Length: 81
Image 1 (cartoon, rainbow, N blue to C red):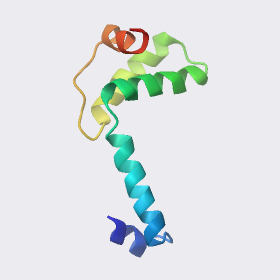
Image 2 (image 1 turned 180 degrees about the horizontal axis):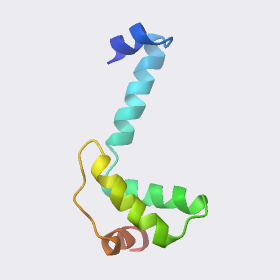
Image 3 (image 1 turned 135 degrees about the vertical axis):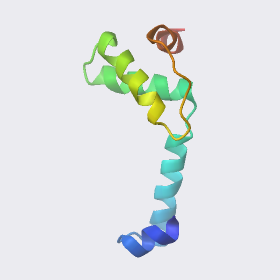
Image 4 (image 1 turned 30 degrees about the vertical axis):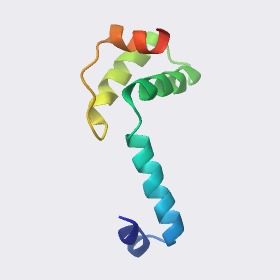
C-alpha cells in the first residue's frame, strides 16, 4: 500500500506510511470506542440522540470488520452505561 501511494500520489514514503497507519488505526477501533467517538462528534454538530443513534447503527456495518448489529438501546448503553 505504501509503495502504491508513493507511485500514485505526491506523498513521500514516510507520509504514505503515516497515512496507512492512520487508516488502519481508524478501522481497527473497537466498536465501543467507535460508538462513543461518533456520538460525541455528532452531538458536537448539534444532532439529537434520536438522530445520532440510528446514524451510528447504519455506519457500523461499513467498518472494516463489520460490527454485530446493535439496537438503538444497545448503542445507548455503550454511550451512557
